[in-house]
Length: 138
Image: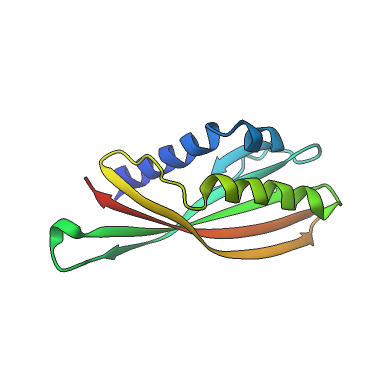
């Protein structure tokens, strides 16, 4: 699972790095946690996590797929909620219904499952969205 998780994170980073608009909206894009020196005074940032991993078995092992729940959390210190919503909107354009490149697997779909509204806490807005990535061994 660790190798596949590594390949999934590489696919997510590749999707992010391939979109100049999303990159221009944020100061950073991180896996698991933002570094201690990450700032959001000028631009916000995004942190993503692999939340869970569910095998999805069909009638044969050859058709087995994996459903991976990924959470993207967006943080922004701008007091205007429109800023964090613009970041989220672009994140959704990039990842909803995307076909990520995951070495050793065929990417079936990356689909948004849930979005949590922005909330102001500790001098910043935060919001999150969950996506299910379905992959199948190639």
